[in-house]
Image (cartoon, rainbow, N blue to C red; front, top):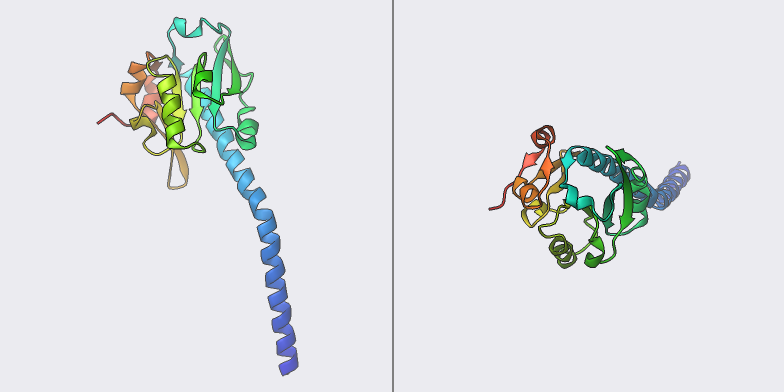
Length: 190
C-alpha cells in the first residue's frame, strides 16, 4: 500500500511539473495574443476617433489624401494590430499607418499614438515635437492627458475606457464631436 501511495505521489509530482513546464512554454504566446487583441481594439477606437474629429484644412497640406497615423513604441505586436486600420477610409481620406522612431519624424502626422513602451523623457520629446500643432495625440500612460496628450486609454474593471482633455483639444486646434466627448472621462489641466 505504501509503495502504491509513493508511486501515485511520484506520478502526481511528475504530472504537475510537466504541466507547469507546458504552461510556461505556452504562456508568452497567450500574453502576446492578448496584447495584440488589445491593440487591435485600440486601433479600432482610434479609427473611430478619427471619424469623430475635425482638423483644420491646413493640417492636410503635406498629405491631402491621407490621415497619417504615426506610432511611437515600435514592436511587432503594435505593427500587426494597427495594420487592421491601415488603408481604411475616414471621409475622403485614407488612413496611412507608419512608425516614427524619433520626435523629429512626426511632422506630417495627423494622429500620434504613443504606446506605454517608451520612457517618460522620450514621451515628453514627442509631445514637445507636436506642441500646438493640429495632431490628435493618443496614449496609454497614466497622466498622459495631464502632460499634453489629448486622449488616453485606461482600463477600469477589466474594460477599456478613455479620457479626453478638452483644453488640449482646443490648444491643438481640433474639434471632437460631442458624442465622443460624452463617452469619455473628461480630464482638465490643473
